[in-house]
Image 1 (cartoon, rainbow, N blue to C red):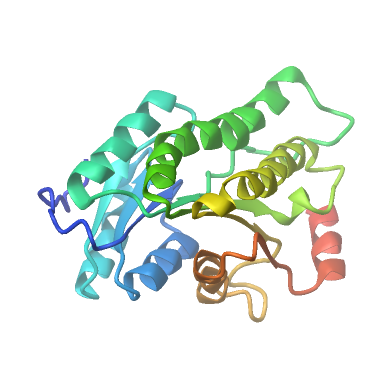
Image 2 (cartoon, rainbow, N blue to C red):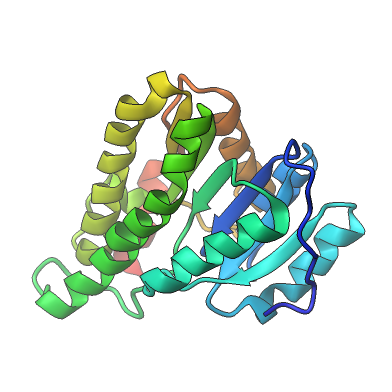
Amino acid sequence: MSANVFPPLKHESVPVIAILGAGPGGISRAIAKTFGANGFRVALMSRSPLELDPIVADLIDDGIVATAVRADVLDHASIASGLTEVKQRLGHIDVLEFSPPDAMPARVSATELTHENVQLQIDVYVHGALAAVNQVLPDMLARGSGTIIFTTGAAALYPLPMFANAGAAMAWLRNWAHALHAAVASRGVQVGVVAIGARIGRQSGATPEAIARLYWELHRKHEQVEKVFLLDVAEWLLEARVR
């Protein structure tokens, strides 16, 4: 459990974002700061929440109510208990952002797929997302409001033979995001997906802050379902092929 623990807060009118799959990198911090600056409380969810304490402290310094909670995308019980803990500490969840950590230690070619290296990606991107959504969607539908945003890589849109297992799983998640949006938009719930194909922090314009704005836009503009951050598709495809 994070050292930055808050007692349960009772002001339910203050919105809450839960970032599932948060890491110590810049995007989680940027998304948290973007929503926090717009009045949200922030829950950062990770299988190693103590690693997120520096981000939590940074958010608190900015006047944002924030905490870190344990949840492992491969452990559905921990997803359920983690999201329950978020609601107990901060209030009902208005925005769920699902951005699982990279489950692929090495690239796997389309000619090298096995049950094991495909199943790991399916467990993360498909079953992990299902477990999280099933915890928050009923409450959102009952309230008639809420936002769910999934994060994928650009391989969800542009099939790459060397990322075949992850790309296929992310494409499933992207497909479901569009289908889920079509099913629940009329009931007040927004569903979106952000696909990222960039060397964050190493490519001009590819800053965490620029990417975080896409999440805020999806939350605010319910007629949009997908945002793609891909500065130069040809450059990205070339880089991906030689990595």
